[in-house]
Length: 153
Image (cartoon, rainbow, N blue to C red; front, top):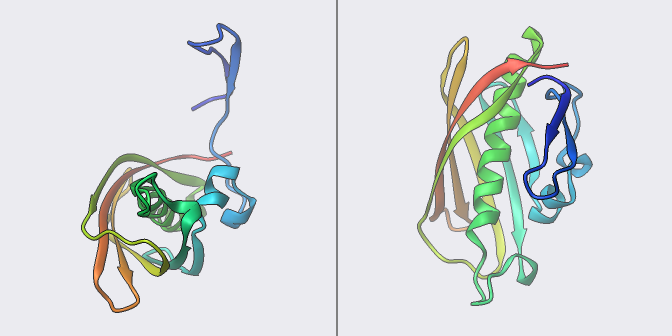
């Protein structure tokens, strides 16, 4: 992705697209959306990322359970951080191409653990598996993320 103007379909105004950036930053420095999801990263390596979420009413659907988008966001974020760490020395970042998340068990509150691991790390693509478990170790959500390695700025 290069920097340049593009037309916003809804407003007809010029929008700016930029290349992914390489600065090492915590998710706390991310967008309001990422901060609201609440993923806290505990360990980051090029092949494994662990973290956790403390879930509560701010993550709920109108039906009183955690919104699946919270899990989807945590899964893609953990995989993207690990995958980008793996290619950082090559001047690249990894961006998600496919996110398949399975929601297995409803949760209303509490701590859940996030564990991401690389299944395949190639020159142009990576595949990561991410599991979210409750404090008893029961699987809450599972995802696989396919990422593309692209040039960073």
